[in-house]
Image 1 (tube, rainbow, N blue to C red):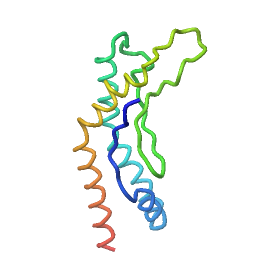
Image 2: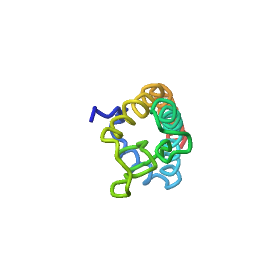
Image 3: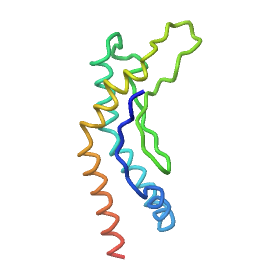
Image 4: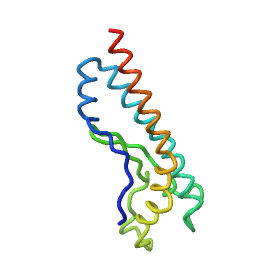
Length: 132
């Protein structure tokens, strides 16, 4: 499978922990900002999957994406899970196809927006800390 695109944020886990110690509300806000930053990638990946991949019709379970957030990362993946053993013929390269045609281009097209929204969130946190 080709390398997965990423935007690396060093110290995300430490930031999350520091915010949790400062205020549980701040940590919730961080998760919300991270989810909001990933939404344009989610929407674009869903659109590209439906448009760029043949035989993937609108409404197909594979054209839906979901956002996941852990302490270390934020990711966008297909909502549908594998169909192994359910009587359908599998596309051997389907995961690679989704990455190449939908998920990686969606990330590349929205990189600047993600960085901008994350920087704005860090600025808001810094303003709150300085005001306290």
